[in-house]
Length: 230
Image 1 (spheres, rainbow, N blue to C red):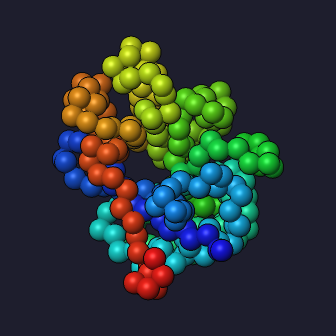
Image 2 (cartoon, helix red, strand yellow):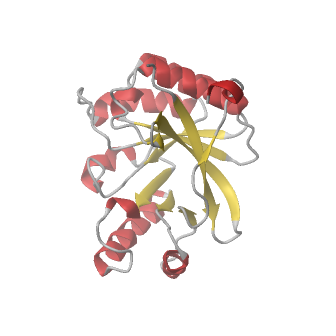
């Protein structure tokens, strides 16, 4: 049986204006238990991802400034996916497509030097770069410092930590990345806002851009053929 994949969308909120300023595309797989995150994005045929991204952005009608899609290093360097990203930006225009570089590892290891030419070409074509999951995995400061001048956004994910948001160590990390965002002139997005207390605390920390279940769960984006197939 051929696996079924679809993108879900989750909004990014500007806390100062209480408006949606961006959407993130999240890929999920249909299983017997419902829609779930794939066990490994790297194991999915790159052509499947490329085709789905193009199909999705073709029907996506956005009234926001930005739309992001998660891409790991190996996918970034895969020609069909790179071409699909470029085509998707053309389809979404004037909405900016943000290439959200995740810290998920694949079998093939790529250095920052390997990634730079492709990322620079995307930026020249009007796209933006977001560095996802900063402070975890391969996305510690010293690992991504070279990419910061090219980036427009960094994202800190509360859900990547076992500690609660109120833990001083977590808040210290957020203060650090907030300072980095100011130094480099980047947007800082705080992911994983789950409830009112998370939202209140993020306000106290001066976080403007937020994402999480407190605002909206990811919503399935149906394609034209889905009235029958999904």
